[in-house]
Length: 112
Length: 112
Image (cartoon, rainbow over all chains, first blue to last red; front, side):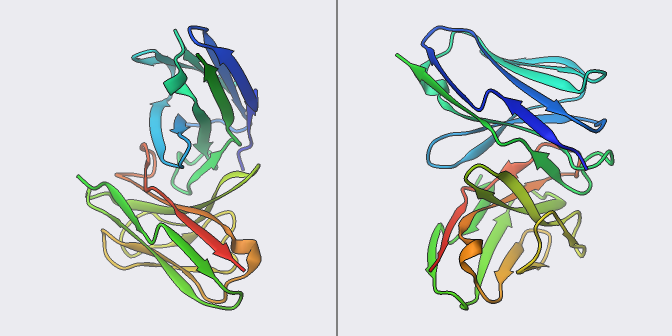
């Protein structure tokens, strides 16, 4: 069964700063997911990636399959980026057929 | 598009009462999932349905039952609610188990 570790657990930064959130997992996977949960609870899928890098607006996700590690970066951070960011991987090496295992999340606060 | 719809949004139950949480998706997705989210624990998989007609246990299935009523609907039943089942419950779906998941807005359930 895959284990997921995220760091940091909490992060407070000033508007405009470059943000990095890290995720490590224990079992080889086909793809890793990054999710965002805003106060009030809604969960949105940001990225699913299996290699290299993906970019969407100011968000960049990278993955190193050999190192079993992924990072989520936010450039030019803004208060509206304040949310919990969650990393998730397939529970087993089966690719997600038996569900995802989630990290505990990184609580990000961007101050104006 | 409604996406994934969960009902109810909030519910308070007494210990021993039963309840069914409803989930419906209008995206023609094959796979559906039920998670619970507790402070400090991250999201944990309760049950999932990889396709219509199939259901499987996740990480924390005890005390719950599910029904995949048709391709659109996947319900979660608490037969005899316990205070330990106080949580926020999320339903999710995707086209195939390896794909990005779409989440409902969650049901906040309190068991007194």
